[in-house]
Image (tube, rainbow, N blue to C red):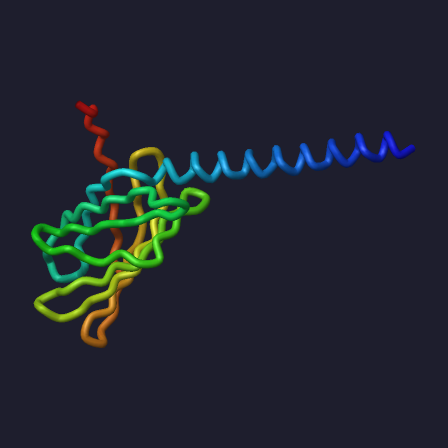
Length: 140
């Protein structure tokens, strides 16, 4: 009876360890689905089409984002990717004043489509956005 119980415990431990490894592998594969340089396009309501570059990198166990719109850099916070959905908050300047935008989008392959919600000088609004991931350049 003791021998059967020990074999059973070893089996349970092996199963739990295997499930943990499978979950870690699935998370890594999912995060790889968002890593890269994304050329976005949107018109936030001021009549000007914007085409920023969002770069997402793996940083240890987390994801890190960089935002570049022409010469203007923004700060990415609360970057999350789960079940094919990307969300983050952008803090930047518009006409010298602070603006924050919360983005939520769905990634399908190398395309993203979603909505941004902005807050500027006490005013708020929403806009749609879309984008494509740039192909990786071969390493030299």
